[in-house]
Length: 153
Ligand code: 4NP
Image (tube, rainbow, N blue to C red; front, side):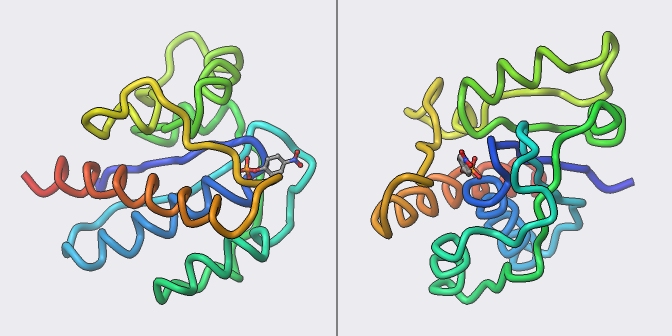
């Protein structure tokens, strides 16, 4: 079965959908089959499309995420995904707090994948501006590169 990867942020309307988009595009480009999804630790935006600024940023890179819908992370996710990547350290703590005793998924911090960025957050752009969404894109694109490289070996 192909590797299953879940990205988790707080609202599932900014950072994790952008991470999902970046990895989907890079996996297609690299010709590798991955199952990719995203979710939020919080439930406020469940059912909503990504933030318009996140949509605009991914669209600048030719990727349309208007059809994505936010969902909240669930305990089953720890059994149906192989890897769960938290977008920031608080999301990681929240994931550990709800993880079942014997998860299938390896749970880690996304930026730990990027050399020199270990331990760091993908900064929440929700209260920021267009520049912050550009920075989010650069971070998630860099992390997606590492994931693709790992599965291309
Ligand atoms: P995300 O951004 O976690 O990257 O999707 C946020 C979205 C919504 C909120 C916070 C962060 N909020 O407080 O509603």
